[in-house]
Length: 404
View: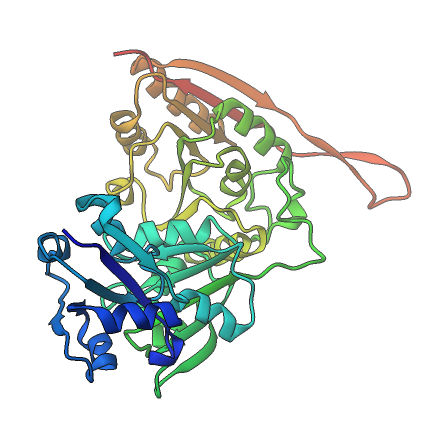
């Protein structure tokens, strides 16, 4: 069988083809491609076969004696048909002639380097998967489609509290309808975008800030929060140590408040997933503001009442409980059902009632229980003398689930 030449088309029409690419196309006996690409060579006598998304191209071309040319957009090996052909045809039957991809053209239009970007195809991906990839990187290019629209992706990012991006919509590149729109994640849900679209997201950083540097014991004052509604930094450090996090674990942060535990845990879980669960509307505002300030990569906001809102989350390896909303016993029962053997719960309590109730539950359920009391006093400058200002003691309950 003959060689199958897979030729990429640029956004400029015939003018964008190299001399070699044009020569191969003009010598072809059969041309395969999308109707809009075949239209570029309507003057040729070659047999033209219009492809749809449902055609099995490898079956169509495998018995062709040649010369055969398959037209595709941009680089045939960049989120394109080249991968499928390589799976189903011998390599010695294939030759690839790339062109400039739509993603390259999009970055050129906005005058941004693209060698440090991650490229995301929406094919066979959920919105959650797409958002995960965007959040984990500083610069992303997304090839959107009719289902995974820029608006839908933006809604997913906003739901998680990640809106700190400059966004470019690069539409209908190379056509009379080309349009480049600079916008934001907040504005995307109400922005109409063309179906032929490359969406570029670039994370915004405050160059004078140090908040994004991985560290433990971030000062309480660095977090936006309602007065005293934050786990103090000394308690956070001890609680995170007690959680014994490993790099790829799933953490539930229940009663996340301002998000301080989730944000610091993110530094310890570079390949993990953190679900910051909060029901209070006011706290959620601060939580999302802190996510945009510190740029954690693996934190997802879950807005709702625990334990009901936990049902669709992946099972946790570790659970931190900073607040139960009055549902402590029910919450601990649900956590116990989902936690694996040797899984660990860390709970902070300000009252003896919570300490006793949680300890009783864990001990009666066969957990190994350890309790630490933390008394924190900080120097105060409110007088002419250096004095210590004591904070209320905090009880840190650590419960490790027994082997089945």
